[in-house]
Amino acid sequence: LVQRKTLVQTSKTPGKTRNINFFQVDFMDHPSIYLVDLPGYGYAKISKEMKIDWQTIIEKYFFSKRDLKLAVILVDIRRGLEEEEHQIIDMLNHAGIRYAIAATKIDRADSSQKQKGVSAIQTACGKKPILCASPLRQGVPDLWKEIVGALKGQ
Image (cartoon, rainbow, N blue to C red):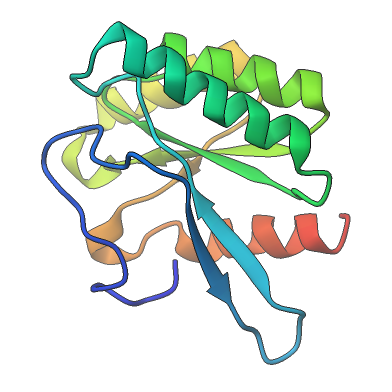
């Protein structure tokens, strides 16, 4: 999103984000915002206790942040929404927080997987996902449009 490859370390092993990470983004024509990276625990190989701890941290964050304008849920298009994402969506709906779904890794999915993934996400949550592929920056303008729209209350 911010075009800085070295800003965040990534890993091939899911579940490496263990804290809430804040990134301040300064705009020329908008006030500064924070992008916040929360732990993803659905696909991570971690203990049940840690999953519960992460869920508690995320829930506290959602219910304590009245200035939170938008949550973006990243979902691998090849695996679709799983229990974790459904829990997050339920929390967001209960907290009254707007959210978008970013279907990631579309460059690694064939057309059948993409079609099935989009359809499953739309059926499950009633939202059309934003299709994203990081190597090509595909979907990034659409994500920014959603973020700026949420900031403007649109």
